[in-house]
Image 1 (tube, rainbow, N blue to C red):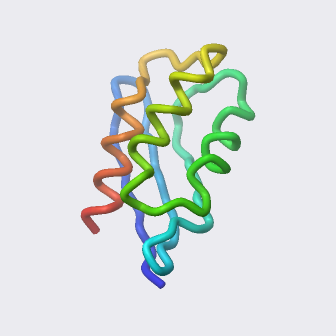
Image 2 (cartoon, rainbow, N blue to C red):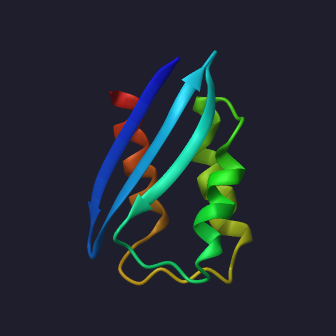
Length: 92
């Protein structure tokens, strides 16, 4: 099992994505940082969406999540910021 951690400093806030990889599948996905997201449970919903999927699918799942969740507000943070943090996690 490999542990991945990636951080990205967005315009206003840090995004940290952390997960374990087992047989190419993301497990124990945690998204933390000092960014603001409303509704707050959206972060947990995104973690659940990524959980249990192949790591090469995660970026498109992030796009899909934000395309479907039009209720999510993130001042000074955007979808690309989450994808950059993911890419940095996968580099490690």
